[in-house]
Image (tube, rainbow, N blue to C red; front, side, top):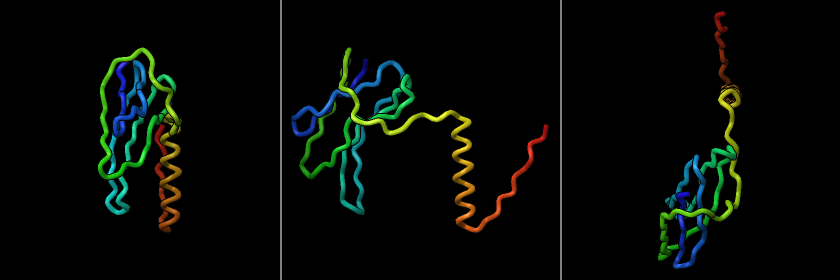
Length: 117
């Protein structure tokens, strides 16, 4: 499988891979307001319907990140499940609930249309 071999300052942190279906992401984020920089290796494992993370680590000035794209039969187990994929029906219901809650906070009234049969 396609995988990322991730190094920080010469030390290997992980070999992250997701198998045949899904995605794998390597991101370095800088937040100017707090001055924080971090490394995030995460992905979606479609067969498990799970968003997962291998690494989330703060970085400092002078740190060196090396990411090598490799093909491996085995990879490191992810460290954390971030969430599960929702069904489309569940996603719509969650969005409706959020809109209703926000409308209530703003004092708005929602007028729903009736579905025509």
